[in-house]
Image (cartoon, rainbow, N blue to C red):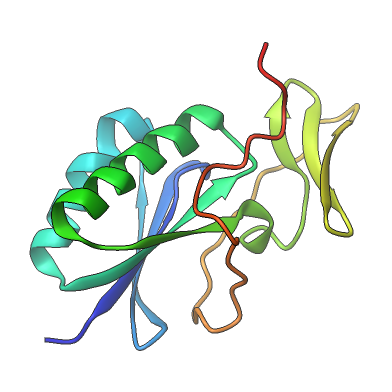
Length: 151
């Protein structure tokens, strides 16, 4: 049975999960609901159906709660099943557009630095998963990206 890679974008609404074989997307599922309510059950189903060799997740910036919950779930899967995971920037999945932080505050990428910027109008959040994984740039670290200081 071939190895599969799972890609999770839990900051997208709805949540996006892609399943890849030989770096090509063979299935894209959009899951309605909160990360805390739906993602774990969906991942259990995927792990039953596919021989997953690696998981990729959007590690930020974006919804801190969704990112933290996804990270904890993936750490648990890594410990129990030995499946490694890597992080990838949200900007890889929205053609570099601003990512909502809170209110009218958005994360933007200026060269290699992520900063926040206020916009007067709401910016649509459109995410997609790639057809092929070969062009994705992975983060050096799989931990969540926390850009905003703690309140």
